[in-house]
Length: 216
Image (cartoon, rainbow, N blue to C red; front, side):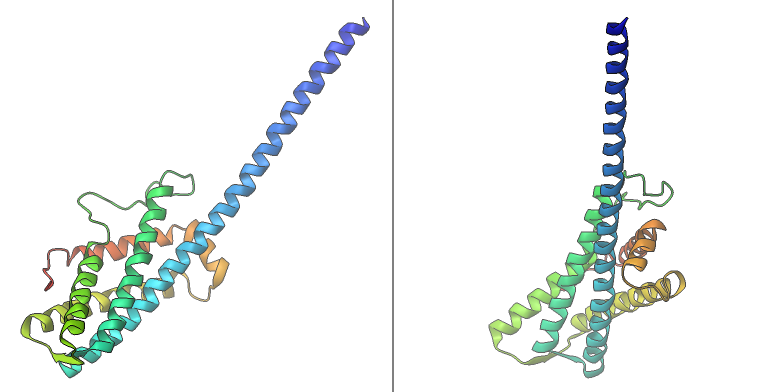
């Protein structure tokens, strides 16, 4: 009789331990998931802010070039730095999107259509143009040059892209995320899928210019 009770008690204890371990694992995974989501949200928010602020600087620089009908070595360096950082930030958003697309906190109806998409193509092309201008300046030891017809057109198109991007992001932030900062903003960006909306918006703007041939 005692052996049966001991076996029953042992079985109950084993089941209890298994359930307890399972509960602890679930709690740990839940906490880890929350922390991961928080970390991703902060990184995404940082990338979007990087795109927004760098693009504002680009827009001001391009307006100056168009106004003077010339471009200085300092302006080229400024543009190259800012386009490079935008390029990195947008690639980071794509990386986060592709890595986490199947997670449960992605809304099924909020995904980017990747059909025929070359991620980051337009900014990469612009960065290539600016890099070639930079090499040209360094090779010829010039401080500034007048814009020829093609370069003037390229800079005008770059300004159009920058203006559209600036208008889109600022309008979106004002409508969806006004008066929010830091982690609160990052959390809402993730929970509402707003960062994917912004990624879509950037891609829609870029897609209008993907066939434009910048001077390389």
